[in-house]
Image (cartoon, rainbow over all chains, first blue to last red; front, side, top):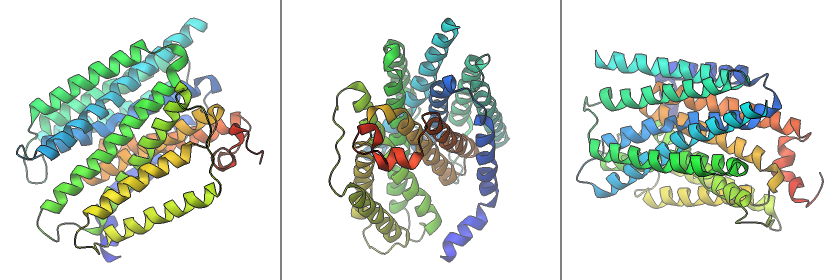
Length: 102
Length: 286
């Protein structure tokens, strides 16, 4: 219990970031026309592809002698990139379609 | 010096994410918003590769592996996103969302492995908590998204609903919490079986969570899983003290949750109704 509390204490700044980001996220979405729901979901999907940064860090600090770690890290990088690139391209295509309709 | 450049780039990327998301909410600026967010992502990736150092001050290595992974992911992601039919877009989003969830889970797995190889006592409850949370949420999001993809793609047509469905799900959830607790308190001498057990149970939960939900409700479920992946990414940010992962992840987590609720409201439904009611499957109208 104590170690969890001290962990929270050590990361107070990050917890503030979390709380404020929650409000920003809610604020940003609050007034959106329903036609944009799907592209918005898709755009948000691409943004959480930021997890790729974690994958790069894992991969970058993996011990080159540890094959299992290398493969895991490599897979993580590939999957994360898929999320980022696929996410943004799909969103762009959706919005392109949106424009033509108008 | 370099760490400041990295920190400032992360700050710029975070701002670009916020702006991008905001602009995506307006038809006039939506496309530019998407590009802005993509630009932020590119900056964050490049800066991480160039400037990131871990706590021991070591730089990023294994460049060949990283660049290889980036190239393969980019080509595969680009091709599949460009080739997919317009009508098949939602399942594509679900698929990519699942990839992000899997990525978060893999990060937790490799960090756990790394931690176990380090000297004893270096694993604090806080670090284990973030790892376990990233693993559970990422895995649920991955398997759930795959099922959502399979359903929308028409691979899986039936809405399977077991008897005692909700009870089974609650039992699995309790199991996840108990095993997580065991790992965080570091009770077992060999935590590996518990960790992988937790991984398996989370995957199972994701599957069971989505299979009874009907195709009409899938966009809501994908949106919910989308916000899950955001939260999983944020736990990764916590693990690495990485602000851009934290802001990006939480932003999607909260925006995605709200979006889910708004989408439900647009369909005149409540979220609990979508998840527990099985209304879209025609099983029962709650």
